[in-house]
Amino acid sequence: MATFYNPTLDIPVYWLAQVLPARAVSFILSWVQGLNLVPLTGIAWLLLPVLTGRARALASVALALVCFAGAGQMGLLGTTFYDNVISLFVLGSAWLVMARADDIWGGAPKVAFPIVFIAGLLVGSAVGLKQPTLPYAVGLCFAFLAVAGGFWRRMFLSFFFGIGVIAGMALFSGHWMWHLWSTYQNPLFPYFNDFFKSPWGVPEAYRDDKFLPHGLWNNLIFPYTWLMDPKKVGEIIFTDLRVPVMVVVLMLTPFLTLAGRFVGKRDAAQQDVMVPFRPALYLLVAGALTYLAWLKLFAIYRYLIPLEMMAPLVMVAAIALWPLPRRAKGVVILALLALVTVTARPGTWARVPFADKFVEVSIPDLPNPDNTIIIQTGYAPTSFLAYGFPRNVPFLRIHSYFIHPDHGDILLNRAMHGRIDAHQGDIFWLVAHWEVWTADHILPHYGLAADMSDCGLVKSNLDEPMMLCRLRKVASVPTGG
Image 1 (cartoon, helix red, strand yellow):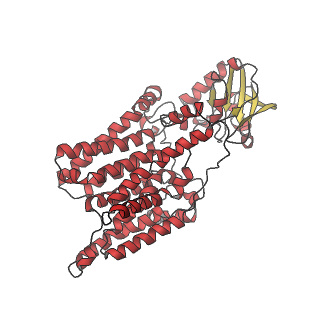
Image 2: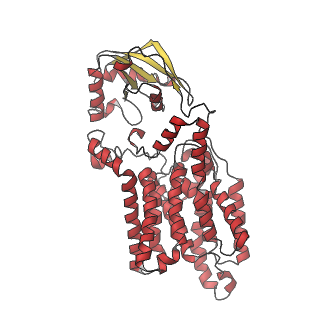
Image 3: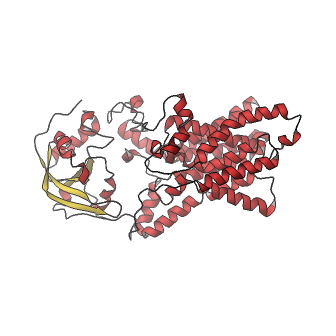
């Protein structure tokens, strides 16, 4: 599947990995991810006007560190998932809107609309670079409809933000969408192929929906379901209360706010607002809408990392609007921030010791590299090993969780059949040792058989050795429809 993802985010790391040692590449990548502290500190500063001078600066930095130290974010430091890279665009957008709140909601349209367009451009850039960022575009765009202002003001703010989102997507993904459209007749290939019906794939959505909760009750308790079993939202074990606590705070806020209106005349102290109202309301509505969009589209925790970082800020913004005395609000905020900090337990993505280069691959000698093709089967992530082979050696992945002989006569299968049938040179099979079962279940569909007595090892610094076995042509078996 990842063969068809927009490669733009990977290019800088790839270039760095060609010229720098692995430690330097990882340091630069982690430094970029660490820049999230800048917009986090900026948003925290805007939410703490009750403090002044050095106290406000120190509190803003401390709050930003609480946001940054989430289990998901810390687990991704130095990795190439990029969820904590595109977060820079998301957090930057929210920071811009909140910092220019007076101009956006009270200024002239010729000032307000360009600002929200730029904010939308930032989020749209993130969506263009990585499509699962879409829930943040939804949340940050439609939050304008819930914040104070006349009907048309709200509509136009949301509209110009949306135009910015589209422009950002076109800027960073337009070239790739055109490539996919011109090559596969689907600009999002293979996703939504039930709509685009590209002949290169089956007419399915290709969505990874195995994590989605079903039913109202399961949706309501979902944040607490993954606390019990983190595998409900991903592949690793971790613990973090930021989002679950944020959800509780968001659910309580409208009820407490309404209750405060009834008692406000009797206790004016409880109406003490600690934060600028419009920026705070925008942040908590954007956070709520983003979470709901994520819940219905993905429910994969990695895609929630920007919101994990925003969650303590949303909590501060919401609790500051509660009808409580200022001291009580401060106690609740500090208690919840301490709770989510001390209970966080980052997961690990199978980190390995540093080698000299970011990716190192060694392969057996190929007797005829100018006339060789490599076949891949199974579900192990072995495609990165192509990096260690001569550039002129083509790779055909005839089976994975994306492609299968049973998909019938789709053009991908047909193209690979044609390449294999026409090839007169050497054919080798790259496979994990625990997936050699595909020799009997997949290779025969392409008229191939493995010579298990003629195998070498492909070694890398990122995984255990993989097998490279010679294949021979035999009569193919019928392919399913």
